[in-house]
Length: 196
Image: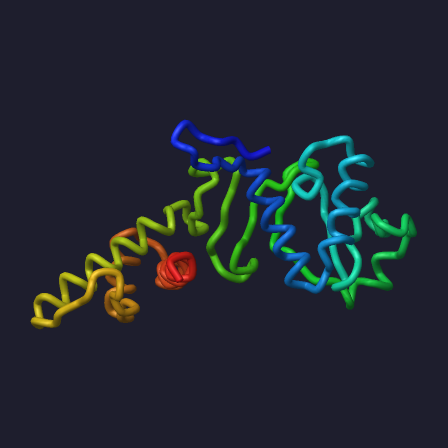
């Protein structure tokens, strides 16, 4: 459960974050709130945990919340009916989660093709690229280099309205950290999405 900090701020654990992300994913896929609440209660009851959406693989077809039960079966948490995974697989939405044992260990917020992840065991769960560098570090390095280059050519940049860094800046930052430009680009995209 989320804690209230001394300054009144809400503090989320990695499991809280995964639960929020799962709820958002289900709502975006079309699952309605009343059904989602029932599915969450049923999952908490079945799994006997406080963060059920952070413990196992849950899937949706856009209407129902399904719990992966073994390799070949799915349980509809509200209707209590089983279905075969191979029949429903073409209709299921993917979630970008990796499991370590029974719990979510890693989340790929931009999908598994992008190199940005949140890993409970690395960097205190903060967003990083695959190479282990925090996305905010790469983003700030690119912004600083872009600002430095802009000043060199006497361009005026407005505070947070810094333009997307050029390919030349991205390559420079990638070379500096010895990582592919693709990782720098993904870190910048991720951080810009957060700021929007």
